[in-house]
Image 1 (cartoon, helix red, strand yellow):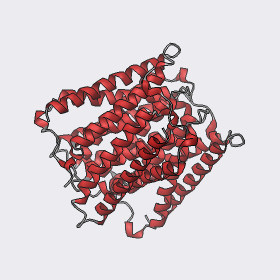
Image 2: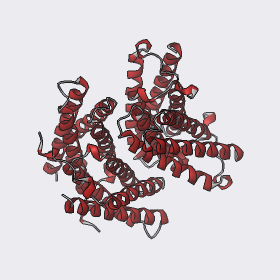
Image 3: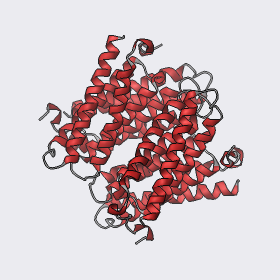
Length: 125
Length: 125
Length: 125
Length: 125
């Protein structure tokens, strides 16, 4: 059996409010990115990528039975990296577009929530 | 500007056949995982997570304008880790279910294609 | 040009609070269905179908520039029909599972919100 | 019990090659639309909506246990309407963009495959 198959941190040990906050931040970021992508600015492909990654991240937290610590950590890293990319691109237009500025803020909030989720998982491992 | 904003490897330098093979493997894996998840075996949540991750991965390769090397590498790692988790779970039922065995094979093929994509990106960086 | 290409009802004529409520109901239903699908009860395939349809519905309302009245009405009908199917299946387990009962309630709320959206579009056509 | 809960046409009565062709056409259309949306032309929001609808349609055919004839027919109608909208928008650029012309062709093929699926379901009802 793969070493990845060690069980997830005991749910009873995990702070569910941290995970709920992360799911909410992913959902909000998916929505902000979807709206931002319709502006047809050069951030649009990053926004679409970020919307899809955030939706996948949110759903995976709702299906923890199908995650391992390794796949969870790796997916959180990918979500953080994708939000960083999208935020950087939207920040270039933040002075010109309220939608881009709000999208960048949602990306930042999602990154922070994913980092808190990683911290919590490491603390309860 | 974030250090993530360095540009993607010059598309002209990248081997497009490697990227096309990776997109095809992601698409095939999404489909195999979606079918496998309907069996209501204990691999189902992992299959659903893997289907979503593979779709997000495939779409991101079709929207490379919205990726950076950092976010691309991180997403490839997440896809590899998720395929590993799903493959491990499905392999437990491989003797009992042809669908699980085929799902595990699709996960393995997708992992290999993502690793080839990482190698190609590093070589052309 | 196809007759489908007549323009969407003038946004200025539409009640944006109705559309916002519909997007919120779709998002809530996607989440309830995703959670419900992890129970591995016989409603799970319907829940997964409903989660995907609700996400597609929500995103399409965020990208109205890419909709016509015909495609919008048709997609609302599909979302209503999918929520009906999921609700019917989950109601069979409503006495045994709080998760199924909440999922059925989210489906009902999403159906109602989609119907209100249809009414609003017809009134502003 | 809702009238929607009558069972799906007996799978043994259905022509699986028609359904497989429809799933393949949905997958091809999702990919063509995703690529087309990155061009940042005014068809992009329609392409994104169509990509999401086609993916939802494909997955639902892979999870027929969670469909009824009513929800299946309604979702096929929505997919046809969305492909029509996307095709109409992309055809406006067909002379200028090979990507738009290929996207429109994929939409047409997907519409035809969904119509064949409807015919087959009605014949086997």
